[in-house]
Image 1 (cartoon, rainbow over the protein chains, first blue to last red):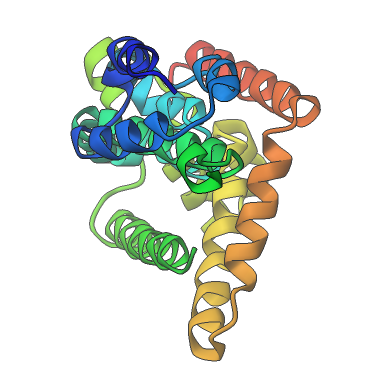
Image 2: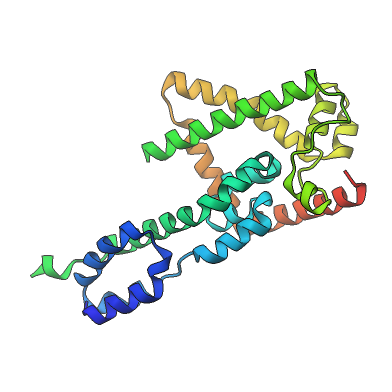
Length: 121
Length: 137
């Protein structure tokens, strides 16, 4: 995939991932075929900033965890008034990292099905 | 996968220990209706959250008064169920080395993500919340 497309992806979606994942993503994306660009770019990722806002506003109901797909943990958070208030506060600081990890995992799973151009040659 | 399972088991174990410590504290040290308020929503906004009153509900269940437990907060029964089955299941899994709790947890999570089940449950929780606010728990 051309460098400009990879740069565009990282510019638009870079803040959705952890810093340490960026170089891996860059390397993996540059090896992709041009035809896979659309599928990669159209992926929906959790926005860490909006998750952070949700966590501050409705964290004690577990809404942040529900949005990230951790339904079990969300129920646990809801049933315990946000983990007796402690878990809510801990999550204010952790939830962005959790969202970014989930995004990285999602991208990794998408890319796993796509062949690497350089390997094919 | 293995790491996720271990994380869940550690998390559940800690949760159960904390919950039982909290219940023990409520049973032993505090008179039933003058407990410590830990709910952040209630402290900040002054309105009860959907699960406010579940400690009182649990206390009523322990005293055998199921009707007043349901009147305070029906979620108490769900918590009672989780707290009575969960630790036994967790310990059996840890001893036998099986993964039945992890598998069931994942299946349950998948089920709960289905809109057909999720929407009615959310509505029920919201109704319960409205009832909590009306009751001024």
